[in-house]
Length: 310
Image 1 (cartoon, rainbow, N blue to C red):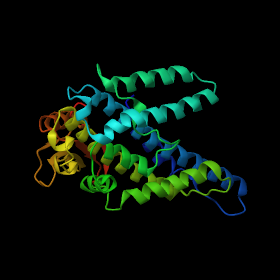
Image 2 (image 1 turned 120 degrees about the horizontal axis):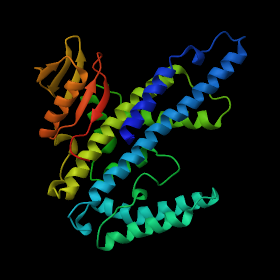
Image 3 (image 1 turned 90 degrees about the vertical axis):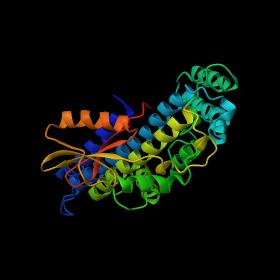
């Protein structure tokens, strides 16, 4: 299962579970049920947040592998990416190796693989280490997410993520403070016995996590494609990534699945069958080099497809 599919499945599962009566507190005298519900909610909060962290790291690895296949010489890649692929990877690999050693795992192979990949930046077949980005700490902070995008020459990272989410119909709430609040809830849920995550907290974060994942993935994927292709606009840091593409939508409506392009109300095509609609929309989005976002009856994003081969 791809990192994308795994993330969507886990978030959808948490979102559905948050509506279960087992997670809702009863009267104060029903202490046994309430304690169980509180513990379950805490566990789901940790799972939901970890799911987004896992997606960010896994997707970043995919994109680093994609960029590694570029014909652009390493010294011409963005400065932030070069620093990440050398100093960043060296430090993160050492920290991860120490963690692996403490856990009784094979830390030497981890170090050797990372060292080989770091050495590849000096010449030969480039292989940017997965430890280059997303592994500076045990958790993926909002600063880490911004750092990943900044290394890919995406400027004003969190505002760009929020802007993409807004364009997809995910609301206008700034997503950086939402992520920071979710991280605090996650830490409380994992480490405080009296943590009291509420069902609405889970539901809100699941929606926010999807919006963050979509915004991050669309921006990082487009930036990676431009870097791999040697687009001078991004190599020189002279482009705002969000302005280099339009988004294509596949909306579920009463008449069927409606394909439309951003800012154009007229439908490109209306199809009754979901599978056929998706197939046609992906083909059209691919031809136009546009990300495809699927939305539900409420015009909220529920799925997305990156169509540029990354």
